Length: 74
Image 1 (cartoon, rainbow, N blue to C red):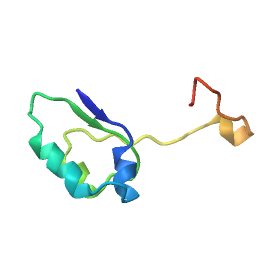
Image 2: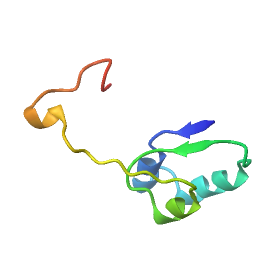
Image 3: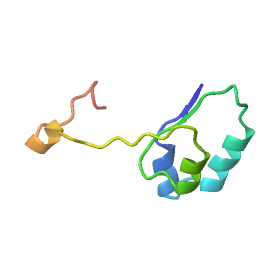
């Protein structure tokens, strides 16, 4: 298993190219579980995926002014 944490954000911000991620996907064996995370996934990566999940914030303590806690959110 390989997890490319926040790679979709990196592609969206042009920190890495979408082509390099797609090339990497094409080189991985079918027996390898590859997980890409992050917002704003390009349609090409969504099309290449077997499973796509979109999470959205429903309620968050930050809305009440509660700051992130060390060891929990960062």
